[in-house]
Image 1 (spheres, rainbow, N blue to C red):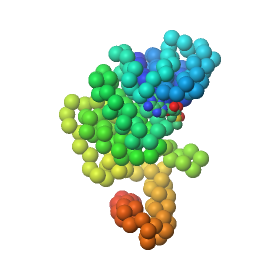
Image 2 (tube, rainbow, N blue to C red):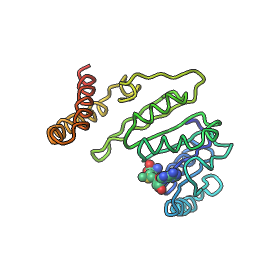
Image 3 (cartoon, rainbow, N blue to C red):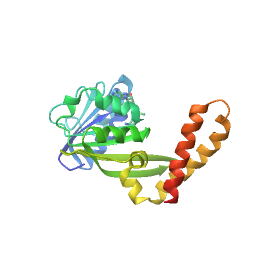
Image 4 (cartoon, helix red, strand yellow):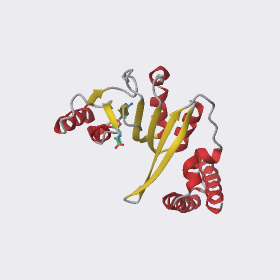
Length: 211
Ligand SMILES: C[S@@+](CC[C@H](N)C(=O)[O-])C[C@H]1O[C@@H](n2cnc3c(N)ncnc32)[C@H](O)[C@@H]1O
C-alpha cells in the first residue's frame, strides 16, 4: 500500500484495519465495510473513539457492491479463500479503478492466488506470520496489463514464499505435513477420495520440503 491510497476494507469488524492505516498515514482515507449490523456498529463506535469521522467511513454493505470511484486499494482479511473470491467476482466493474489488493485468507489461499492469476493481478509481496500457534498469510497483488502465470506449486505455496523459504514458512508446512500423515491412516478405509487427495498433497509438501 502507498501513502495517499484510499482503501476499502471488506468485512471490517471494528474498523481496526482502516483506523490503523489512516492513523499511520498509510492511507489518506479508508472505508470500513461490513455486511452485518453488529460489526458495522462496532466500526462506527471505534471510528468515533479515535476521532476519525470523515477519514474512516463505516458502511453496511455486501462485499464490493458499494465501492466508490475514489477507492484504489481493497483489503479482505480473515475469511476463507472461496468467500474472498466470491466477493471479488461479485461485480468486476467495481474493481476497475483498483490497483492493489491486500488479501489474507485463513484457508484456501491457493484459490485466491488462482483468482489473482486469472484476473491479471501479480503477486508483489507475501507474508507469513505465526501467532498463538496459528499461521497467517497475507498477499499483496498489483494490477498489471500483461498475463500472469504461476505453476501449480507456486499457487499452492505462494510464489514469493516459495522463493524465500523462510523459517515460519518451513515450520507451517512441516506441521501441516505431520497433521496430514496422521489423518491419512484414519480415512484410509472409508473416505477414498479424501485419502487420495491427502496423499497427493503429502507428496507435494514432501517434495517442496526436500527441495
Ligand atoms: C472473521 S471476520 C474478519 C474481520 C477482519 N477483517 C479481520 O481480519 O480480523 C469476518 C467479517 O466479514 C464480514 N463479512 C462476511 N461476509 C461479508 C460480505 N459478503 N461483505 C462484507 N462483509 C462480510 C463478517 O460480518 C465479519 O465481520
